[in-house]
Length: 62
Image (cartoon, rainbow, N blue to C red; front, side, top):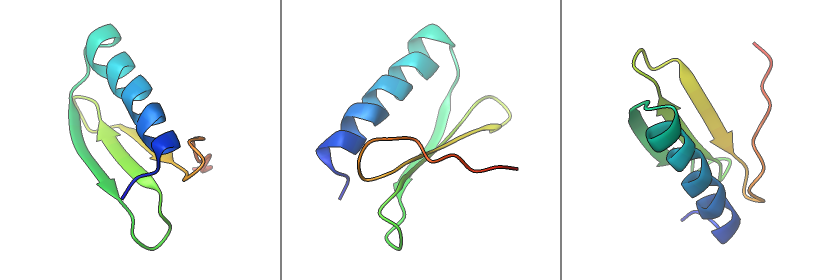
């Protein structure tokens, strides 16, 4: 179950993606191992976000 902080961040990013950037959201799920919310978006599924339990975004170098 996502935390209240994760839900607030998820709402903000979903609004920006769908109403401002006009990008589709393909997947939203919770990783039970880490507690992070994972979001996959973009026409080519190129946008990935992980929201930590405190509502911050996880930075992962590629």
